[in-house]
Image 1: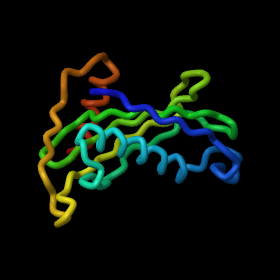
Image 2: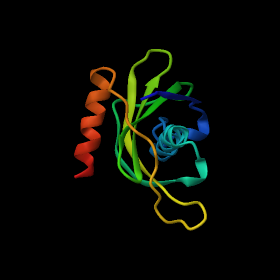
Image 3: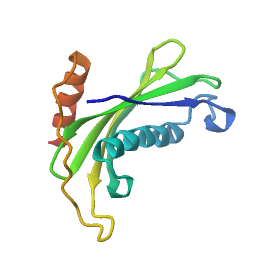
Length: 141
């Protein structure tokens, strides 16, 4: 599936008491990046709601002044759900710093009831996408 990219500059207000990226801020950015991928693939923003955020993990601290590039793509499509893998990398070095999986559900914007989407996964391109798809299936169990 297509990869969607979002960039964020880590500023002072994004830091925790250790002087590194606050996990709650990172989670918000992760969900935002995941939402963008799910909404773009589905085609309607009003019909996408968050169901779960899973396995958000940091591989190293992120300091003030870093530019973080979030890459997101849909890696699993159920009848009404879309799971998005999101990785965040230091935009300067390319080193991965965060990874997580976010599941969204498609709903009818008027009733709030679950609604089937029309997203169909294409063929996985590369080992990384295959790994992410396998992990997304494991998380569904």
